[in-house]
Image: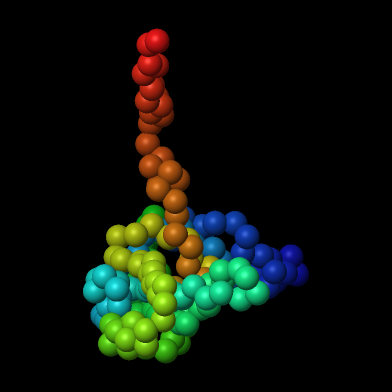
Length: 173
């Protein structure tokens, strides 16, 4: 009993992929994102998504070196979405985030920073992700209070049969 309590408080290191393995407490869930009732729109590409990370910066010279000065960092989430696991779905409660839209991106560009650049990372429905947070029950359903999203690299997603690497042709001399 005490061991279960300690695991709930301090555990959560193991990645869960099955709905049947869920327990209350800290957890790392690995699955596929599904859209909820509402989605957000990314400012650069204009894509509907469940979350995006936006970063804008410009190059400035300081003490003889070129450095990046960050103008805006924004992490925006849809109010809620769903994570599909093997055997069921978990509703994900997103952390509150300040809204950020294409209009604000255009305002940053209009400020005329020399060497202005912006990037975004978009998480769309159907993306395989690893979510970290606290799991609890809401009636009969499981809910994850989200703390962190990690994208799963494509190499790990393709867990199919072994593929032989391509051979490069050697140049004859």
